Amino acid sequence: MFKKGWLVLLILLSGCLERPRDVEFERALTLYESHYFSILDNDRFLTFTESFDLSIEKYELNSQFRYDLIIDNPQVAMYDIVVVVVESNQDFESLVNLTPSIGVFDSMVNLVPNQINIDKGFPRGILLSGIATTETIQLKVMISWKDYYKIKQIREYFIIDIDFLATDEPLDPNDEIDDIDDGE
Image 1 (cartoon, helix red, strand yellow):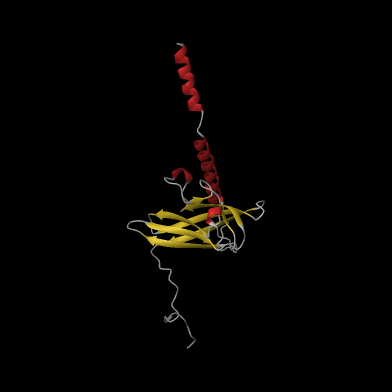
Image 2: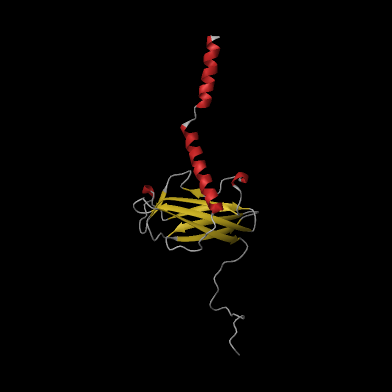
């Protein structure tokens, strides 16, 4: 009887104790969820920023499409960067896979003008990739960072519409433009 009591107590205690990794993941997931909802609740999105360059590369795969969100060429010191992407206003509860993010589940990244040292956390830029199953997708992106003194936190929200089948090639200056009315 005494051994059974200890066995039950041990099982109960082991169920109550969480491994540090699980606690760390749960904290990160809670942070990710709060950022995700802040993006969905936001109603003011930028199309341009002077703080860095933001671009999209897109690729057609067999039956899917891939996008690369690129953040580079910082014009200000950006420390402890957090980026979270919401694809096509998808509800958090219906997510099968987490959308691309950085700085939530992994180590912090810094972008500083004219400073590149990957070993110390200063890459040239940040690349986040995602897979879409439809020809068009809308990305809502939150990019957050701290200033040089790590006191002020800046948060910017962007909307990016992607049409994977549209060509984004620039117009060749030698091409004839038929739509121009020359007044004659």
